[in-house]
Image 1 (cartoon, rainbow, N blue to C red):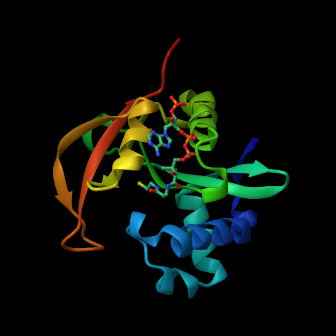
Image 2 (cartoon, helix red, strand yellow; image 1 turned 135 degrees about the horizontal axis):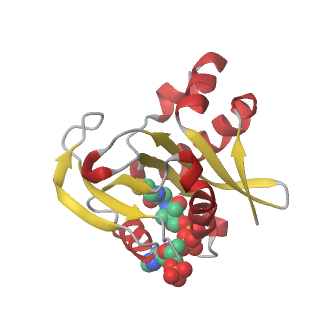
Length: 162
Ligand SMILES: CC(C)(COP(=O)(O)OP(=O)(O)OC[C@H]1O[C@@H](n2cnc3c(N)ncnc32)[C@H](O)[C@@H]1OP(=O)(O)O)[C@@H](O)C(=O)NCCC(=O)NCCS
C-alpha cells in the first residue's frame, strides 16, 4: 500500500474517491452527494487546495482517503482531518493507520502536529478506530450546521514524538 498526497492537478482522483465515499457511506459524512456531484472543476481544484487529500493506493487503485486542512481549531488543533474513508473491500487492513503514519511523517513541517476531527456520535466503529490511532474525545457533542438534528463528537490526537 502506498500513500500519496494529491496535488490540485489530481482533482479528478480527488473527486472520484470523494464521490465514492459519499455514494457508499454517505451517512458517515456532513457532505451531500447530490450537490458534490454537480461541482465543476474549479470547485474541486479549490477544495484540493484547501483540504489536502491523502490517498491510500493499492495496485494502482485509490482505495482510501483523508483530507487535512490547516487551521487553528478547537482544543489546540493545528489542523482538521476530514473525509476519512476506506473502500469496504479494503477495511481492517491498516489503510487508515497508514494514512495517519504518512500524516505523522510530515506533520512537523506542515504544522499538522495536533489533529482534530469530528465524528457522528453514533459512528461507534469510526470512534473506536480513531481511539486505536491515538485520538481522545474532547468537549460536548455539537449539533451539525450542515445536517441539523445530527450531533458530532470532537476528537484530538497529537503526533507521537518518539
Ligand atoms: C473508519 C474507517 C475509515 C477505518 O478504516 P480502516 O482502513 O478499516 O482502518 P484500519 O484498518 O487502518 O484500522 C485502524 C485501527 O482501527 C481499528 N479498527 C478498524 N476497524 C475497526 C472496527 N470496525 N472496530 C473496532 N476497531 C476498528 C483497527 O483495529 C486499527 O487498530 P490497530 O491497528 O491497533 O488494530 C473505515 O471503516 C470506513 O471507511 N468507514 C466508513 C466511513 C466512516 O465512517 N468514516 C469516518 C467518518 S468520521
